[in-house]
Length: 186
Image (cartoon, rainbow, N blue to C red; front, side):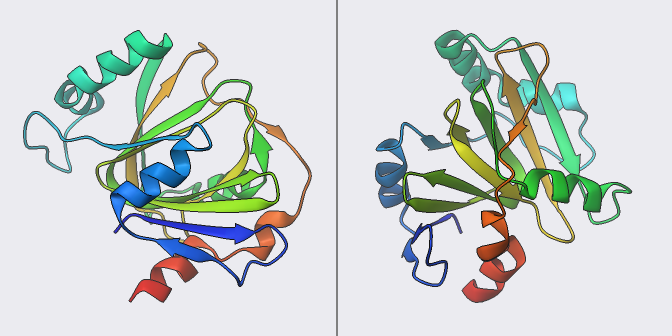
């Protein structure tokens, strides 16, 4: 289930939750965050390669490429047995910004984006079928959980791809993790 929780940035226990897609989309669009759902033009399997996955979503990808001038597209796949899962998680959990905007489409699994805008933190639980775009220079972090299980299409307007400027803030340590958020929904 997709989920948006909006917290005061100094009260991580005081979040207001939204579970309806239209509510999530409305709240995020006020921040210029694009949140939408995509479907593949064919059935995919867990063994499909990057080219097959991209081809299954080509129409939606082409629409975004035309709209925003994306120069590169790839697929990232992290599983609980990935040898660098802890290293990647720690890097993404640190609050940062990008000069480019960040776009992720979840082909499978889930992840939790936290957007720190003004005096609020918007925690967006994305699942299979969700696309989120984080505007350039928006302070944020991402939690893929202790045992990540997701596959995403990433789109970039720069050839360098993912380049972060870390803020040095410890705020991410105050908010519920992906694992805690998912457990609270059970």
